Length: 356
Image (cartoon, rainbow, N blue to C red; front, side):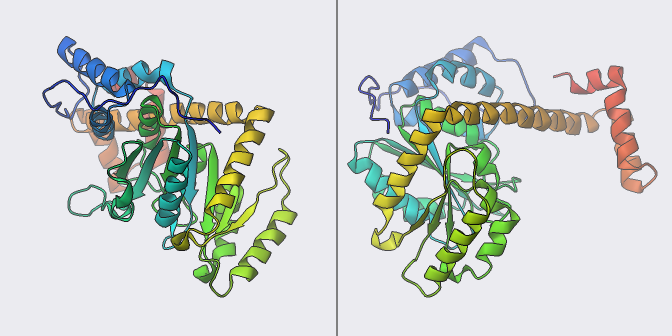
C-alpha cells in the first residue's frame, strides 16, 4: 500500500481571509474571489486542515468557484486510495471505520473520512452521529473527518462526495474511507465513487441475503460479517459462500468474506489485508485505472444532468413559456414525455433556458 508522502508538508497556517457567500445564481468569478480560492487551495496543498474544511464547505454549497477549485486540484490527484463501507443500517459501519482508521494510523498512513449522515429535517445538515462515534480521532492531525448530509440523494452518498474526496486526495490523505448512510439495498453510489467497496452485513439482519440479491451482491469487492460472535453468523457466512460460488467473477478476484467484531477490534487486520490484496490485483491488472476512468465518465454525466435540471428549474420561475409547459403537465393537460420532447427539441428555446 502507499506510504505517507514525505514531500507533503503539514501546516496549520492559513492567511486571514473574508468569508465567501453562496449566491443562488451562477455568477462569473471576480478577480478577488479567484485569488481567494487560489490562496485556499495553495494552503490546503501544504496539508493545512482549515482551508481543506473551508473548501469542502464551498463544494457542499455548490458555489460558483467550485469548477475553478477542481481545476486547480487536477495536477495533485490520484495518490489516495479510497475504500467504501456500505451496508444496512445498524451493522456497525461507523465502529468498523473507527477501528480501521486506528489501524491505518498505526501504520503511518494519513486518513480522510467521509461519513454520510441522515439529513436533519430542521437544519438540512448532517445529524453528525458518525463524528460522535469517531471522536477519538479528533485531535489527530493525520485524520480529517467530514460528516455530510445526504440531502436529496437516494444512493447512500451526498452528490458532492466525489469532489470532497478529491479535496482530501489533494490535501495529502493516503487513504480515504467513505461510509454510506445506511439505507440498505439502494446504496449503490459507493461503487461509482471508491476503489474498493466493502459490504458489511450482520447476522440479525434476517433478510441480508435478499438484500444482496437486490443489488449489494453486485458491488461487493469484500464482504464483512460484523458482530460475528452472535447467533446466525456462521449461517450467514455459509450463505455468502454459496452465493459467491454461484457467481464467479472474471477479473481474477474471488470476493473474500471476513468475519469481524469491530467493537472488540477483532478481524480488522484481516480486513485490511484483504483490502491491500484487492488493491494489488486492481493495480496489476490495470483495472484500477479503468475503474477510475469509468468513475470520471459517470461523474461527468451526473454533473451535466444535475446542472441542466438546476438551470431549467430556475428558468421555470422566470420564463413564462417554460412555466406554462410545466403547469400543463401538472394539470394533466400534457403528458411528461411530450413536454420533455418539446423542451429538448426546441433548440432556440433550449439554448435560452440553459444559458448561464
